[in-house]
Image 1 (cartoon, rainbow, N blue to C red):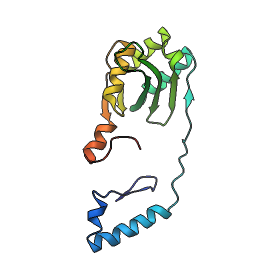
Image 2 (cartoon, rainbow, N blue to C red):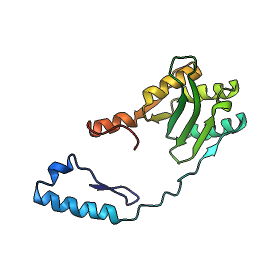
Image 3 (cartoon, rainbow, N blue to C red):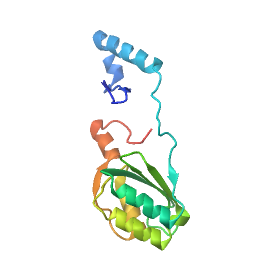
Amino acid sequence: YCVLSDGTPVYYFSDPGVSVLNRFVRKKLSGLLHEALTRDPPKNKKEGEYKIVESVEETQEALALLSKEEYVVWDCETSGVMFCKDFELVSLSITGASDETYVWYHGLLYQEKVRALMRSFFGSRVKKIGHNAKYDMATMRLYMGTPVRGFYADTMIMRKMMDGDLSASLD
């Protein structure tokens, strides 16, 4: 059990079924579970806030701001099967440490000027974090023709390291 900086409690039990066999742990678990189920969730001030990038100029501005961040988190959405003719990058989102999120969609992503700007940004040493980053890095390499530099962390691997029995999905 721990509390995040915004006051959100985080509960972790390796196996609640085994935990309830011990009466002391069961009492603690019961209290924590009651608190978790009755407490109001914190309000996320940034929920749903993002900027859809619609031009080369907006791409330049967004990537200039993101280049100044300590780290960025990125995610690719694709369609088709990688390395097949129908595979394509559908959208790309990048969030900076300051919580500014930018989203690029298919049409803009395939403009050569935008691709060149993306090659420059993803070739920079800005720390980059992803979920299932191996796949997203391969996608970006296919899209840009160059490898991603500055890779820092993969949240899917981090989650598996915390508990190998848990799913690595974002659910």
